[in-house]
Image (cartoon, rainbow, N blue to C red; front, side, top):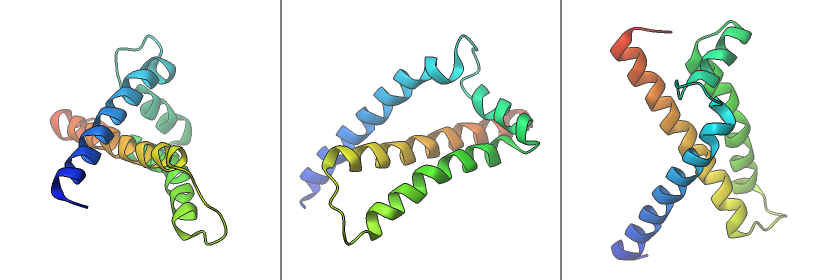
Length: 108
C-alpha cells in the first residue's frame, strides 16, 4: 500500500468515525449535554470509575475484533471489518475525552 493509498484509508476512516459518533450521540446521551454521561451513569451503576465502565463496554468490541482476526474458518466482508474497527476507534476517542476531562477537572 502506498502512502497515498494509506492516507485515503485514514481519511475515510476518520470521517466514518465522526459520522458514527454524531449519529450515536442522541442514542446514548439523549438530551443530556454531557457527551460522556452514559459512561458516568454506567460507572455509578457498577460502582467503578467511568474509564473502567467504558473499558468494560469496549471489551465486547475488542473481543469480537480479536475473534475476527484469529478466525481461520470464517471470512468477513469489509462492512463487518468497518463496523468493528470503527467501534474500537470510537471507544478510544471517548476514552481520550474521559481522561482529558478527568485531568482538567479532577472528576471521576
